[in-house]
Image: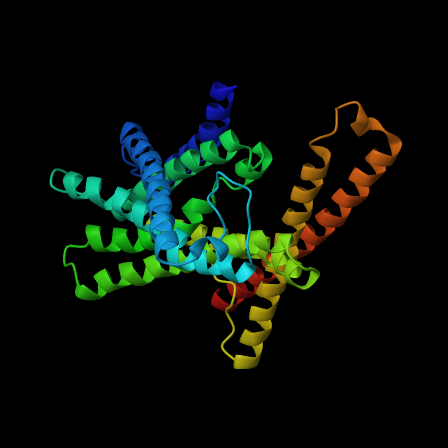
Amino acid sequence: MIISLLLWAAIPPLLLLGYYYYRVPFAPPLLRLLMFFIIGTISGILALSLEWIFETVANKIGDWHHIQLCLPTSRCASTLTGIALRQLVEVGPIEEGCKLVAVVVPTCYLQRRYRLLHSTLFLFTVAVALGFTAEENWIYLFHGTASILDRTIGTPVHAMFSAPWGYALGIYISSNTRLNRDRKFIFRAWLNSVICHALVNVLSSAWRYSLTLRFLSYGLFPFLLWMFWRLEQLLRKVQGKPAITLISDRTPQRRYWQRSLVLFALVLGGNAIFGLFLLARILSPLSPSKLFDTDILWFIFTRFLLNLFFGVLAWGIYRYLRHSARRRYF
C-alpha cells in the first residue's frame, strides 16, 4: 500500500519533468535534473516542518489555531478569511521560500564550474517544484486528505507558482552583467508567486462555505488556466521563441474588447476543465459495471458534451485572437 502511494505521488511529477526536459533545447543532463527533483522533495519536508514550527510558536503567542486552516495532515477548517491570512502569512512565503532556496543553493555551486543558461535555471526551478509536488502528494495521500485524482490533476500547480521567479532567476544568473534591477525583479517575481499560491489555495477552499462564497471556487480553474498559459509563455521565452500575442490592436476600445474575450475564454475553458474534473470525481467511486447503466451513460454523455461545447468555444475564441494578431503583424 505504501509503495503504491509512493508511486502515485512520484510518477506524475516525474513524467511532467520528462515532458519539459524534452521540450527545452540544450537541457542539462537528466541526472542533474533528478538531483534537483530530490532536492525539491527535501525542500517540501523542510517547508512542512517550518509550517509546523510557525504554527506552534504562533499558537503560544496568540490564538492562531482559531483563524487558520490546519496542516494537510488534518481535515479541520476555519473561516475563509482565516485561510487567506494563513496562506499569505505562512504557507505561501514558506513554501515559495523553500523552493527558491532549493534552487539557489545548488546553483551557486554549479555556476562556479559551469556556464548556466537561462533555460537551465528555468528547468531547475521546474524540477524543484515538481519534487516539492511529489512530497506534498505523499503527505496528502498517506493521510487520506486528497484523492489520487485530485493530486494527479494538481501535478503542474507548484511549477506554475514558481515559474515567474525561476524565469527571473535565470535572467540574473545567466547574465554577464548582473544588474541591481534584475535582483529586484527576482523579489517581485517571488512575491507574485506567493500571492498566486495563496489565491489558488483560497479559491480551492471556497466550496466548503456558504453559497455566496462557494461561487469563488468557479474562479479556480480559470485562474489555473491563466497560470498555465503564463508558464508556457515563459517557457517560450527561455527557448528563444517569441511570445504568443492575443491582444494585438492599438486602439483602446479594441484592446478592451480583446481583453474581455481573453477573460471570457479563460472562464469558459477553465470551467469546462472544472466540469470534467467534477464528472471524474463523481464517477470515480462507481464500479466499472455501474458505468454502463443507461441513466449513468446518459449523465456522462450529456455532461461531457456540455463541457466539450464550452471548451471548444473557448478554443475558438483563442484561435480568433491568434488569427487577428497574425493578420495585424503580417
